[in-house]
Image 1 (cartoon, rainbow, N blue to C red):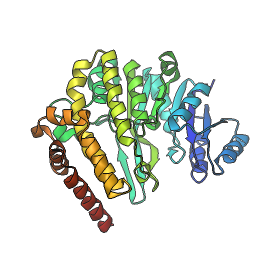
Image 2 (image 1 turned 135 degrees about the vertical axis):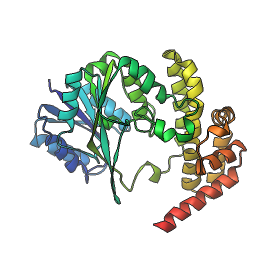
Image 3 (image 1 turned 30 degrees about the horizontal axis):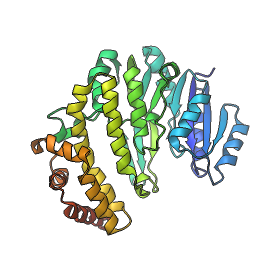
Length: 355
């Protein structure tokens, strides 16, 4: 039984996979296995996975039928033999000491979950991002219930205007690839990725389940993972169902809050979370929908959604973030679809011109 199983979903990753796997096999922690889950790739990735496995007995390969990253990770979880589980994306890479660091701290502190900082590698440079503010520390169960778990449901009154400061691991910084999980925690509680394609939320919901059951979390204030931002990202591939997925996530959070007896917290926090995400949703459709008509129709659909209108009515405008977010939310409250589309297009044109 290896100390750590690292699960790598692979889809058409022939250009980046060798570097990714090299960073894993070069870990200072040698007692590990790498599970490559080829998810119906149409390039040379399937044969490349097999070739990598032939070179190192620590590499195992699963060939699946193209169910998406959540399904691929779940397949890897079913096959994993390690006492701890990590996830790495095929276009990213890990620092040599990443899994030794996370695994060592998890053992020292008897933590169910270990989290580290990460590098965001962009064409224009690299920046360090922190899932938590401050120094390395351990969160006991009481801390988890009061300082981490509530933020999966949103923000408290007074936090929305500067929500970025109140944005811990639980919200937009919640990624599985900067974490190491105790396998027993996942197995005992049946923790898996959601079956539906939710885009940008599978990590968040998986971590919600893990955090809700964790007795102790250890945080390493050290960047150990390289998240490589590719030109072909989610925002570069227009997903018409993105908004519907967001609505399903809000429904999931409400149901989970009820299950965890956190209905009161969620009722206060979730509308504020929706307010922070609404400008991004509107901009996504206004900037990326394939025609002006589709842009306008998509924005109108968002503005007419009860989840959105309810949040905008409930949260006072005095709490809204300042600047462009506040302007967008004010227009959204009045259901002014056309000005929103035009403003988003103008902003996109300005960004393009500055490049």
